Every structure is written in C-alpha cells, then in structure tokens.
Length: 290
Image (cartoon, rainbow, N blue to C red; front, side, top):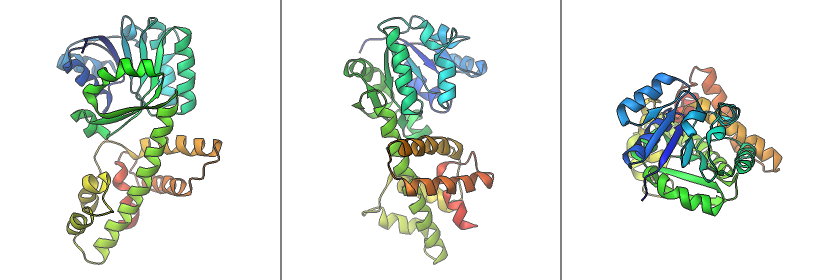
C-alpha cells in the first residue's frame, strides 16, 4: 500500500488510537485537536506534526479523517476560514468517523463537492477497545471510487468495513446499530438482574446461555462487569443519548416506529439523573439493581 499524507482531526478516546494506527502503517500524519496539549502528546508518542487549526492540518493531505463529538463539533472543524475544507485540495477525500445526522453528511458532501473533494460518512462501531486494537467496524456512505481509494488506508484500524450506499447511508446504518444495541443491553440488564434476584450465579448463567441463541457481543463482553457494577468502558451514556436522539428524530422523519428505542432512551435519562452520565452504556442495569 502507498504511504500518504493524512490529517486526523479529533484525538479523543477513539481518534487518538485510530490516528496511531495510521502512523504505524507508515503514513505521514498531521493532527489537530481542540485541546492542543492532547495533539502535542500524540505527536510525542507517534511522530508527525500538530497544527493550530483544522485548515492547517488538512493542507497538503491526501485524506482528512475526522472523529469529534456531535453535529455542531463537526460543523465547527469543517466549515469557515479555519475549517478543514478550506485547506483541502481538489482530489483529496474527507472522511467523517463521527456519529452524526445523515442530513449533516449530505451537507458536508455538497460542500466538499464544490471544492472537488470526495466525502465519505463513515461512523464506526467497536468502542474504545476496538479503536485501540484496530478492530473497528466501519459503515460507509459515499461514492464507490472514494471508498475504493480510502478502504486500504482505513483497513489499518478496521475489522470489517463496507460501503452501504450513497452519502448518508453510513450514518443510517449506524442508527440501526444503536437501535439494536439499546434493545440488547436492556434485555441483558433484565436477565442479569433476574439471575441475581433468584439466586443464580450470573457468570455461570452467561457461560451456558452464551453458547445458544441468546449470545451477543454485549453478553460476551459486558455481562460479568454489569453483574459486578463496573461501568468504566469508554462509550458514555451521554454519547448514547446523543446517538439515540439522532435516531429517534430520523425515525420520525421516515415514519419508522421505534417504541423500544424511545423507551430505552428514557431509561438512559434515568441513569443520567443518577449521576451516570459518564458511565458506559451497560449501566442500564443500575435502574434495576437498586
């Protein structure tokens, strides 16, 4: 694979290790982070260069990757004189790994197209551990040519990636992902709480039922810590509620009924009210175990 000049904007719990994998693959990395000290720390660890604005980081890059917080954050680092798009050259590709609305993905693609820049909406699943281990699943929306150019680069932190359709399809697929996770975690919470209350050993129960039809990633990776009351695994309740808000708004726009998703979203509001905003999403069980 060719080595490229790559910009990475946003060095949070996901972006920091993702950019690290790009550096380890031999690419020349230019980074920007809202907190400059974090960018300086990354450069000290991985090499490359840190820049004061997204535009400066994007200048001269073949690919510009972004992984920030929400729609407003994406707009803030993408648009304007200091935004990444202002620094991007025709023929480069802008890839957004942030989970945002499909409407914003379409807005970004239109703005990029005016500059001759390709655009992919490419939200990820796998959490902090997936980012650190290079085992993320990437759901992509955009043009086939832009995907084909980018996939060999993102392969350094992907367990699996797939083009799902035109711009916006990646974000819509991520919404399906969050719908399914919300339902699975609520069911798992109820199952573990039930096992504890009837006097069963939750670990023994999970060892048995995970070999059958009840098996899930959440069961394999979160059941034990849920039973132990440990909720420090990266993807916070605040971020899940942000994702579910996007999903529920999109569902209303498409007249897609999401009754369970709406209910679980309110359950997460209960967790926030308990002081669990930064607990990970498996903390749903705390509503039942008090």
